[in-house]
Image 1 (cartoon, rainbow over the protein chains, first blue to last red):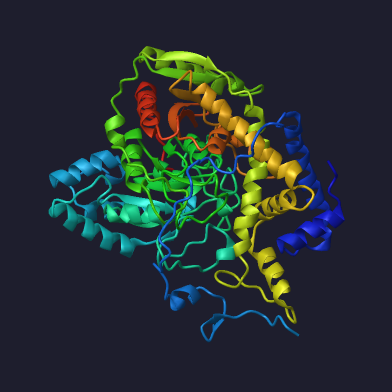
Image 2 (cartoon, rainbow over the protein chains, first blue to last red; image 1 turned 90 degrees about the vertical axis):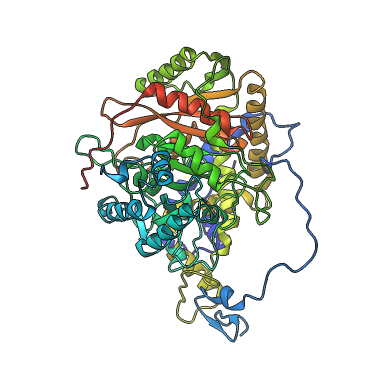
Length: 96
Length: 491
């Protein structure tokens, strides 16, 4: 499969919302290529008729009554926030 | 009186029941042991006052005739489990200062039974590691040394195994995503068991890879493991993957009788280049099974070699999604670059908060889930995962339980594998397949290598058959009859 280059690492970093310094892109490309090169061996396995397995549990998801069973915990929810104002999470300005 | 920290859970339970020991005495002895355990860096938070309060409550419970298996037993909690009002960071800087407003179900189950919390235990950051070297709080030392050389305790449950092996907890909670209970148990001569996926609630357990994560226990005997596992297990409506099934009396499964049982030996686990000592220990285990009257059968798990690469797609993919929640907004660290906007804040926070291995896995996961690569990597891995699971289902038509080595080596030195992620990943070669299939598995101390370091054997069972895993584990424990213990160099 395709080799990961510096530009691809920068793109993945952006998608992951992790700032990566310019001088770290090249070494990271090497590390990621090593790992991806190694997982490539899965290509040897014939999976044409196999359904993907998402979970080891085959049980159906349970239903419950559509009622409010928790809530009214504004203080608890905000307690660990880096910044909370007027009962909301506060973040840097989004709209210019 | 003898050193109370050397007691097994089962022994302490019996003394507590007879009134010959109080939970307070037992807890005080352990608080002292924890205080003298700093050199190993196993505890990152100590809660002695809380422990004494809980001990007094336990003594009252015992007096009232309400004693359960874990009542009054001092335990350590892996930092992955949310503990109300007590800092919980999964040993990541990004959760700096996080004090949960709620309790995980696993720990709540322990407290409901009267167990006593000694503190929070070190681990690899977000459980991503096999040597406890990725923790933001620094590595944990293994109580077992190779001569004068320090060794890693394994990971990710490094603090859990070190505290139990070093007599600074009677038992500890742990979690297993690809081997994080079994591999460190093998490295420290402790008993680790990971139950069937769905047996323990994941509510309040910091998520790494949700389709793989499962809680379990570390103890100094199989019997103790049965007692503690029973306490943490059970259905929980707060976890959609928790299964509504009665929890058996696990201790009652320890009959020692495995006559006529079929023990499967997977031929694919004979790895080229595996140390002779591991191969020899496995043979010894097979002999013990025969001597106990079990029938040993060769089985095949043909997709074994694809388990690790499958895991290193599935687990990072789930991690990249789970760890998206760390955004500097709702909890933990926030880094705000000057004149930066919201996205700059996200990116700076995550750059400062995550360690290298976590970043690597988030990025791999993001890549394999991204447009154009999803089918080739992620979907492909999920299909191979099904084949690996099918291998086990077929094997269990021929046998009741599977016996393998736990890890391909004994504990290694610090820094030995940190430069090469792939070499580190290989540690989990024997544990990952069962994690992918969601099967119950244990690691039982079975011998020592030439350097005097512990080695474990792995027992894998059918889904929901922890009882057979425990029963076979106890037979191995008895046959191995290990009396060696760490020399307590930290005292």
